[in-house]
Image (cartoon, rainbow over all chains, first blue to last red; front, top):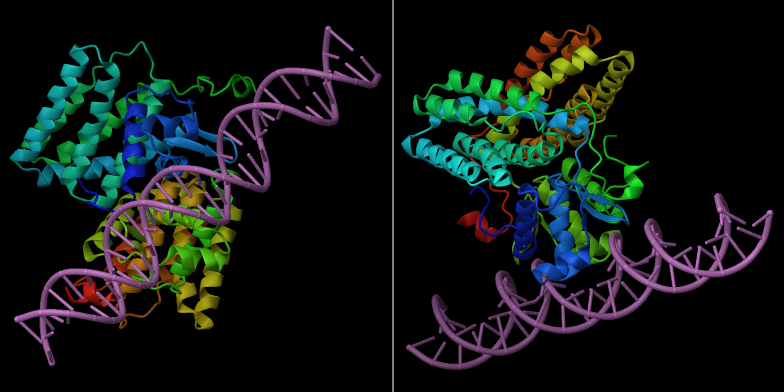
Length: 228
Length: 228
DNA sequence: TGGAACAATTCTGTATACAATATCGTTGAC
DNA sequence: GTCAACGATATTGTATACAGAATTGTTCCA
């Protein structure tokens, strides 16, 4: 991975990652309240550690911290959703280009393995896991590009996209975007940078257009807030 | 500002901002140790709050947290420096373009005011403040683009750039980049997006080439690490 | 005198306790 | 019966206390 071995508190980071995974796999719904006591009890740590973990997640925009009111799984607004994909459109195509130009056989194999896992998850009727893996595919590409800063940004954007898709996915469109990923792998295998750039560009547009961004579904965090 | 009024703990955020400013203005040198007790005493808060503030700064990559060893003002490596400017090259030109196309008279006036402040700081022999303001000029452009996510990224990158410039600035080049900022303002006043994009692109290249990225100066955090 | 092992100190990591704020239920008045 | 105000409860914000790790200073031996 990109993170150095011992950078922050181990306990809080471990818990933050566990919670992030739960969010990605949609076991924690957007808007869910994350009580400090409750989380601490689940993981067997004190609120001190939980607060640090929640702060990390808040920095990644996966949870929303509200003063004196607690932490909630983020519910991206329509605007935030557009902005996230706007940022991805700036970062990912060019990153895919340089990644494709750098990619070696091992990198291509890794991508193929990812795609296979994605297919397996779909076959096993685990759509949430398939969605998570399809996001990790993008993260993997950023890793191949070997630019830690951009990698961090893309990771964060992909994580937020998971929430966005959970909220705004149009049920009527099928979950069949793996074609795009397949084409990307081909471009990587051929070290065809410009093709990878174009493919990523249109893939992101497709993704965005598969969302229904007309208004925010109220998966309310509380009835009170749902109705105001 | 873009931040919602009450998002995180107020005390830790306030302290994090104060420390960030100190870092930007080079009153805290790269590599300086930030003892929790000491910081807490300065700001009159307990270590709990200080730790939260340090964690925020670590997320912005302004400080380096080392397990069981404390927090230090970050010392970007040569590689990190390149990566930061690589990310800026992906984000800022396109952002400048849409900002220029959106900019109204008020926005242009704000930019002019920034530039004037920058000149004033230079005239008053406050190079650190001038440098900080020249960074804020880029942040202001991102704000005009009205994309919160990109704004956050650019803010972080500009902040890190401040550290990078502090470490890698070649003394022999003059601090006269305000010409580029002036030209950018003209493009904004004319709502000339493509021109703004090109100007930003070359401005960033100029900035990068004004650095000496051959090797990292050892402004060591400790003698031990300086010599190994 | 040089070096290594050990002890003392300092500092971070975590847990717990207390204070402040928000939420929720109840009571009372109109 | 509705609304407002008040009190009880729960949850977050902060400080303090304790435990563990790393650093530093000392001592002892070769």
